[in-house]
Figure 1 (tube, helix red, strand yellow):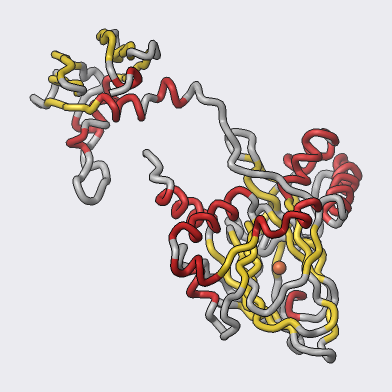
Figure 2 (figure 1 turned 180 degrees about the vertical axis):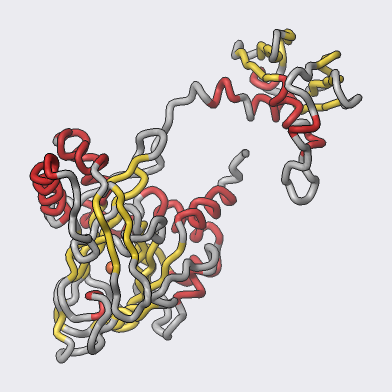
Amino acid sequence: MSNKYTVKKIEKKKDYLSISWNDNFKSKFHFLWLRDNCPTAIHPTANMRVFNILNVSKNIFPKKINIKKNNLNIDWSEGNHKSNFRLKWLRDHCYTEINKQKYKSPYKFWNGNLKKNFSKIILNHDKIIKNDKHLKKWLELLHSYGFAIVKNSPTKKKSGFRVLNRISHHRETFFGTPFEVINIPKPNNTAYTAQALRNHTDLPYFEYAPGYQFLHCLVNNASGGNSSVVDGFAVANYLKKNEKDVYKLLTRTYVKFKDTDYTQKSIRVLHSPIITLTRENDFNDVRFSMAAMGTIDVDPKKMKRFYDAYQYFASLLQNNKFKIDFRLEAGDIFCFNNRRVLHGRTEFDPNSGNRHLQGYYIERDEIIARLNYFNKLKI
Ligand SMILES: [Fe+2]
């Protein structure tokens, strides 16, 4: 046992146990927390808590404590109950230590220079299918860069499910799965035209916009229709560092996103800042789509400043310093974090050839949860 997991001294305080470890770290473990986390509180196979916090009083305390063979034993004042904790478990779940740790963002920002290292974000379809090591690498890229391209996939319709299901199930939307990115007559979405699409995130009018999008290219031999991709978090981070007022406006102003697609009997409206943050002040998501922006209804005192900030952000999202232009080939699956990375395309000529992508959504939760599984995350 390393020093970290052995105890130098244990003391009973008013409402917690104080443990000094042999690496000189000092932890607090509150009585109710200990009782709530007694190993018997957890169902052995369901791994869910069966203990009811209402079955003890807030005054519960350890009548007797002792440390024996890397275990802490407690006799409780209520319910004639005994707990036996492994010291390693206690230290690994020490919330004194957890709360002292500095937050480390999982995101690696990138800009137009990534184009020179494009091979970094490229994976092979069959390797992901056959080997968990490659699957894990894919998940890591998706989580850190928010962008990857899976090459040499089959080009059969709906075959994207196979690689997606290596992660988990898909997220369904009113577009259906997969959705067909192809030009159609009387389109209900500009994606279903041959027109250029400015860099955007999909479905920003959903309270919970789909976490990831996989665009599976089945055929792309029309002229035009090149793709673009930009790291919204990197652009947001640039604003945070260099344009504080713009950043403040985009993180604090609630703007209207909407969808009134004529094929649906629904009117979708959501007010949200364009950039949202997590409790650690890291980036949570970027919502940006000129196409899906509603009629902006911010306070007149703020409107001019908001529009200046919005226009500036839009210009950076199209700027070569940040964005990457590339061409999807048949068999490519363009995968990106739809709540971070924006995508677009140039206009294409539907009379010059065919361009057909099939799109899938999958939640960010699924990517992270699967990665946690491979990383054997301690919880
Ligand atoms: Fe899109």
